Every structure is written in structure tokens, then in C-alpha cells.
Image 1 (spheres, rainbow, N blue to C red):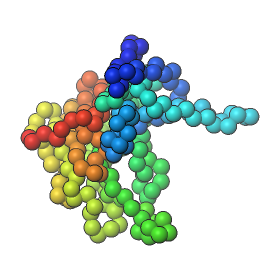
Image 2: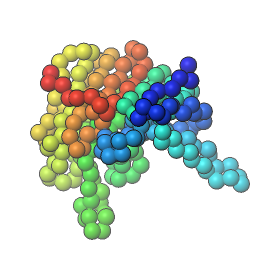
Image 3: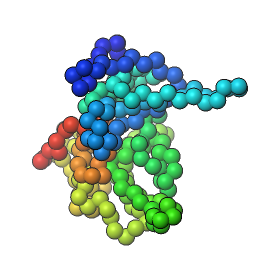
Length: 226
């Protein structure tokens, strides 16, 4: 049951939320999480579709919460966001806090690991482009893949950012380091752990356990040496 509470700044319990679909769950960006000192690791948006004569209604959950959406149990406190249930359902709920390709809505079935974007014409705010390291989910194949998307700019602005992956408890592998992307095959991995650090990091740690059917995000994990 998700009716227990968890500490948040030592005083704030989790709000027990009734989930209505469609809904989205968003990991809190590391920069915002560090800035506020009070934000939970994850936020949630509940959407009531428009039905005449009522317009669409959205409710935003921006405090620690616990809920169940479909077959997925969700828990968010200050340091941890956890989704437990069928991976395909969890990925359908997850959405990135960052822009999607071309500056549009966040991509579906994709988890942003590191992100840096800007306008080609900043004064006009036109031609948005971005560098991104992603963990993408192929729903048809039920498989994950690490991907790097390069912006239209020659220079990469993520040179101080580091992303590493640990597969099935093995050694820490470089994914993005010193401005360079190193492909890593995660297709057959049962457990994918992602570590990230730097100004463009989306969070410090993510774990995807396909056997236990758990996706977990944290912002208080130090980058390991190996």
C-alpha cells in the first residue's frame, strides 16, 4: 500500500493522490532541485480532458506524493522518485522537464540524462537546437537504447558534463565524457544504472530494473570512481 508517509525536510509527509489518467510524472531537474532546497524528486500532472461545457483541467502535484496509476505505484519524496510496475506503463507516464526535438513538447518514451540547448538566433528566439544524451524506449521491441543527439552548433556545450552507465552490476562505462559520446549497448541489460554530473545533468542517478519492474531517480548520489 502507498498510504505511508515519508519525510520531506523532516516535516512534510507524502500526499496520497488519486490518479486519473491521462497523467504525467516528471523527474525534477537537478538545477531546480538544488535551487529550491525543498522540491521533491518528482512532480505530477493530472489531466481532466475537456468535455462540453467544461474546458480541460490540469492539477499539478508539486509536493511529496504517493499514488497508483493503472498498475504502476509511484512514490516521490525529496531525494527519490520511484515507479514500480510494468515498464511500458511507467514509460508512458514519464515525461521530461526539457524540450523535445526541435524545441517542441518533450519526447515520448524517452528519458533525458543530460541536456543543453540554445537558439541559433537568440535575439529573435528562433531555431532552437540542443545537445542531448537520452535513454530511449522502443515500445514495439520492448528494448532500451542510449542515444546522443547533436545540435546544429559546431561546438558542444556539455564538455564539463559526465554520464556513465553500469549494466547488471558490472564496471562503470563512459557514455558522455569530455564532450564525446561513447555508444554503449544496453539492449540485453536487466539492470541499467545511470550516473550523471555537471551543469547539464538531468539528475545524479537513475536505475532501471527490468526484472523487478522498477524505475528510480535520485538527486543525492555521488558519481562513483569505478
